[in-house]
Length: 325
Image 1 (cartoon, rainbow, N blue to C red):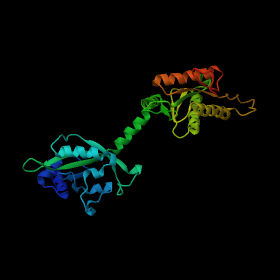
Image 2: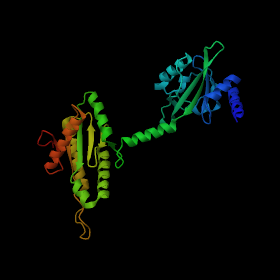
Image 3: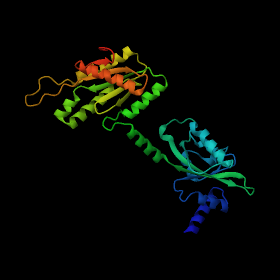
């Protein structure tokens, strides 16, 4: 079995211009190369040979007038990082482990901006030394990690997303507020909630309450303007970050949200005696400016929400003011 494996890698090595010794090194580089791309570099990082499946990246070495550099495969913003890693390895530095970088898998990589053309690959590199022990190039293995990256992205999205509404959760919204505060803050933020949710839950049950929350979230998404950031803070309250809005314009927008929701959620007139009367749904909101800290900002907005509800609901209030709408 071992001899067969060595012969197989010797054959692969011959196909990309390696001698027997280099072919054995290639065998030590990896145990299984199904779907992987094997590349040989010269001492400057230019690609001398590559396995045929490099064509999957839109690269045709047989038609290339000039040897491409290994960094030509990387997406532009990651080319310098990849080049530094390869140069360090060729200079005799550390080369263990894998480095990951995005590749534009398209023949038009210099101009292509399509998201589906970007794929993530991991690179493992082993320097090849001449008789004097000086690095005279390197053997590289490129392995697709696109599926792993996609899974990581999905897991991250789940960690920062409310599962019921699909909006950002409190953790993600607070992280966004911290970023805005780091740049000086000053934006307006609103905390909104459907009035009487506790009573609705007790009367109609959790399923109905969830449907109301989902519907209110979709309503907020419809009302939101470009640049607004929406989140569900908990099972009852929602938050909207309103960048580039003055306090007056922010109050007008939030009041429009509250008024429109009350109109849309109003029960149809003349319910049938056989059917129970549908609940009257309204919403209230509190406004605050992003300043001091995340906790301070949200506390001020939530105090405004408490004031709006204390006034009978269907209102917008700012903490420290009697009424803001």
